[in-house]
Image (cartoon, rainbow, N blue to C red):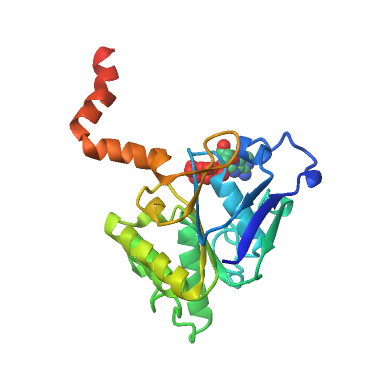
Length: 247
Ligand SMILES: Nc1ncnc2c1ncn2[C@@H]1O[C@H](COP(=O)(O)OP(=O)(O)OP(=O)(O)O)[C@@H](O)[C@H]1O
């Protein structure tokens, strides 16, 4: 583990009435203590998970459009609106790692193609040996995970499940486990996947209330809704569609 605490520097905030300080979870944030190598951010759409993850990436000096410290490309890289208001506490401090966001993955793949064009020795080294554009979305995601996540580092992932089949999500869990065990890697993952959330001993931070709070796996909607659905699909669907018939 490397990153121990994320603090919001409230004294620096000049305009509390503008984005991102209008997001309830950011408004109420003081600090998040990270005590396990794998932490998850969960919550409804729009509750601030990506905003916080991007700000952490900014403080890690990763490209906020996705990538590591060395991936300086401008395409869609955004000025993190929250980044300057965070303080990260490290023990020990590291620079290695990666920020992955599903939404700008395409640009990241193009950035690698450009590197390959400019430097014939690059050969997609660390990225599976060929352009990420020449692999399916899911294949290239897993290829990136397998090849680029090889060293000790901190990995910030925004909805990595987006392209992964259930079987590949399991493969990804295994990879996380290997990296945590052998390289002491640390992961902070924003996700909606009940499979990924099942990682043992992970700390899950919910953004669903006013304040970010820790929640047990079995208490998450992801677990309860998925379990309810799978345990009695027909009954569940009847209930779900009942309103349509009643109207
Ligand atoms: N650049 C921006 N300017 C103003 N508002 C923004 C900006 N980016 C995001 N928001 C708003 O901030 C809120 C939080 O967005 P964010 O992307 O952090 O949510 P999220 O929890 O990651 O959601 P999802 O699960 O859908 O990815 C949303 O209401 C969003 O519309």
